[in-house]
Amino acid sequence: MPTLTAKNPVPRLHYAWIVAAVTFLALLVGAGVRATPSVLIVPWEREFGWSVATIGVGIALNIFLYGMIGPFAVAIIERFGLRRSVCTALLILAIGTAATSLMTAPWQMVLLWGIVVGSGSGMVANVLGATVAGRWFAKRRGLVLGMLTASSATGQLVFLPILASLAVGQGWRSVSLVVAVATLALIPLVALLLRDRPADLGLPRYGETAVTPTPVLTENPAVRALRGLRTGLRSKDFWLLAGTFFICGASTNGLIGTHLIPACIDHGIAEVTAAGLLALMGICDLIGTTASGWLTDRFDSRKLLAWYYGLRGLSLIFLPYSFDLSFYGLSLFAVFYGLDWIATVPPTVQLAGKSFGEENAALMFGWIAAAHQIGAASAAWLAGLVRTDTGTYLGAFVSAGLLCLVAALMAGFVGRRPQEPALRPMPA
Image (cartoon, rainbow, N blue to C red; front, side, top):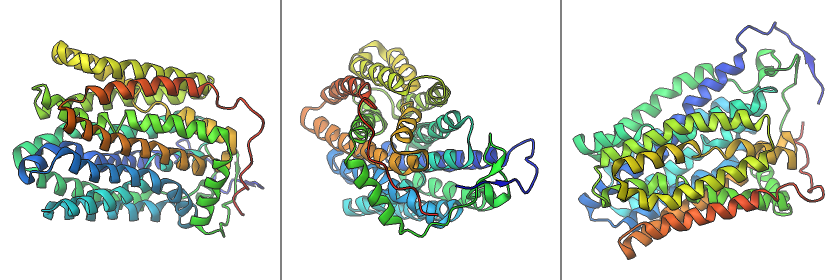
C-alpha cells in the first residue's frame, strides 16, 4: 500500500498513546460488565431459587457471544470505524445491564445477561485491542497489545470486590445499575478522543515516518468475516491456535472467572473475600500480560505459549488442595495463576499475523478468540453441572489443569509445516 509524507509534525507524545489509553478504559469496563454475573450467582440462587446449572446457561451464552461477535466486530470496525462501533457497543451494554435490574424469570436473565450483554461486550473484547495495536503501532506492538489484553482480563476481576460488596450491602440490583451508569459515563470520552486511524490526523503509525493512507473498504463486513473463517478452516495453524485458545478460555474466565467465588463459598470463605482473590489475580494479570507482550517482541511465541499453558495447568491441579491450606494457600494460587491469566494473547496474535499476514491478524485472531469463548462457555456450563451433580468443583478444576498441559504440547507444533493458504488482502 502506498505511503505519504506526514501532513503534521509528529508530536512528542504520539496520539497513538491516547488512543491506546482510551481503548484500555473501554476494554476494562467492557470486560468488567461481562464478568459481573460471577458475583450474582449466589444472590440469584437465594432470591429466585435458580440452580447454578440454570444460571450457568445465561453465563455460558454471554461468554459464547462475547467470543463469536469478535470476528464480525473486526469487520464492522473496518467498515464503520472505531469510534462509532465502540460507542454503540457501550450503549448496548448500558441498556442491557440497566434492564437486568427488572428481571424476575430465568428467560429474562438469559435474554439480557446472555444475549444483550454478551453481544455488546463482544464488540469491546480482545479483538479491539488487536485492531488498535495493528492500526496505530509499528513498534512496541507486542507491549501495547499486552497492556490492552491485560486491561480486558483485569476488568473481569479487579471490580469484583466492589461489586460483591454492593451485592451484599445494597442488593444485586444495585450492581446492575452501577455498572450501567459507569458504562454510560465512558461514552463521551470515547466519542471525544478515540480516532479510527493515524492517517485521519495526518500522522504515521508510532514507529514510522510515513503516513499510510486509509483503505476504502467495499466488502460487506459479514462476508469478509466469513471468508476469513473459510481460510482458517483450511489451515493447520488455525486449528492449533484455536484449539489452544479453546483450552485457554475453558481454564480462565469460563471456569475460574465464573466459579471461583461459589467454590470459595463452598469452603466457608466469604463472598467479598473470594472476590478479593479475583481482584488480586487481576492485578497480577496486569503485570504478567504486559510482560508477556514485552517478551513476545523478543522471544519465540511458541515457546512462550508452551510455558504459559504448562504453568497454568499445574496451578489448576494445585487449586483444589489449596483450600486445605487456608486463605494463604488460595493467595499463593491467586498470585501464581494471575500472572498467567491471559498472557497467552500477545504470542497468539503474533503467530496469527505470521500465518495469515499482519493486515489480517486482527480478523483471524477474532475467530481464534471465538474458540476461546466457546471453551469458556463450555466450562462455565459444565462446571455448574459438575457442582450440581457432585457437590464439589474438584473434577472441573483438575480436568482443566490436564487440558492446559495438552495445550502446552499443541503450541510447539504451530508453524511447523508448509505455507498456509493466504487470506486475500483487505480491499482498498
